[in-house]
Length: 550
Ligand code: TEU
Ligand code: CA
Image 1 (tube, protein in one colour):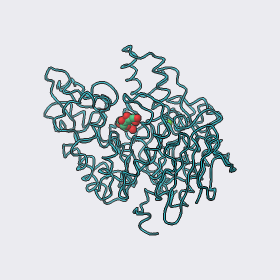
Image 2: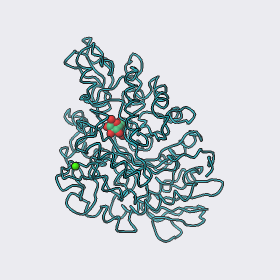
Image 3: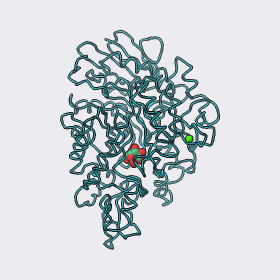
Image 4: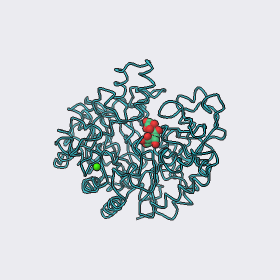
């Protein structure tokens, strides 16, 4: 094994495929309707069968669940509904025994308002924990500035005990921690070491660029108000704090880190991930998942040429010191097949396999979100009462209760964008509740579980699940699919995405038809390696994906 390949330093996390688990919705082991750690433990063989190298576990910490665990009450305790610390240790052990690494979610831009730090902080202005959070006095003019919460409304909440306001860039129950206070940073380094000493292999870091606030908290301009994340992510100390975190907490361990870089532009990306800077290994960039959003965050149709341009643009902006991620979904996004593919019965399977081909052959570490390997689809929501997400509820109050948007238009828009599509329970079997629970599931199971479920997929060698497994194995066999240079061969084509991945030793060509029609394109062919049709004809058929070795 050489140290470098095609100019890149080889690292395990560049060669890895990651599988994200949202524990609440993965598998319930005790019939309370909520997924849990023992449920995951029982499915380690399923995860292993896919061939992934790393599991990313969404928050498993003690939390009152205002935002399903992204509001942490105790960073050293396991959420009671999910199990105990000994269940966690068992899961970590079982994954490691299979050669699968585990990364956990570090949610430290904010804590829960029920965290003991905040319980203390809010008590009085001279409490020792006061400066763990961001407080401003009430000057009689309302909120201290015009910051808006990402989840709608003001980012300030007046607190009864002292009459001061605290900052919350997300929900009221998610007060922002004050990273300018060195004591807060030490607490975070400490809790990171706590989990690293247990043996976890790294962290996905929630909205990590938001940790440094602009001095004096100046108002947002009118233009900034539409997308405040670009201001919130651009504080002056973020890079100092990440470098300090690397030195103080991560350095002695062999970890992988991936920051959720909401609001980070492509120009700023190298500042977070250039391997000479000692900050993060990778970030999640939001360009792809914002392809179907307009300036106000509402759904809008997307064009393949714009989608493809993102990957060329990123490739040009990131040199060999930077390493990208590839993801098309997660717990905050709709389902891959409904969003980028075609979830009608005749195309669902083909287009899900096409998206798998793309995910696993682009440059960057791929992240698979639970259920996408089954081709799970968006949920057919019809009523506001069916949603769980606090963000949907906030938007409803802001848009529908105020009379700006009709209920029907609101539901139609959420059908495209709601985060709850990703959060409906995993579909394990055709049994009631998809075999997710023997009780009442915390969120409804998609009625298509009769057809789309893991039992069926595992038993069928031609399933989407086995296609993912085959592509993961292929990626392992062909280093060009990991480290190879990227070139888009048909940047302007409206239906076909075709690109090569090239090292000194090999060139792989990937051709994907993003339409339900036959399309003929002029491409070099070479040896057919795999695809989502079993034979080869001259035209690319509807949603056909092919991989060639040239
Ligand atoms: O998400 C950050 C975040 O801002 C997203 O909700 C984003 O607005 C959305 O993906 C845009 O498409 C992280 C977590 O992933 C999310 O689940 C949490 O709710 C949020 O932080 C607060 O912790
Ligand atoms: Ca349970």
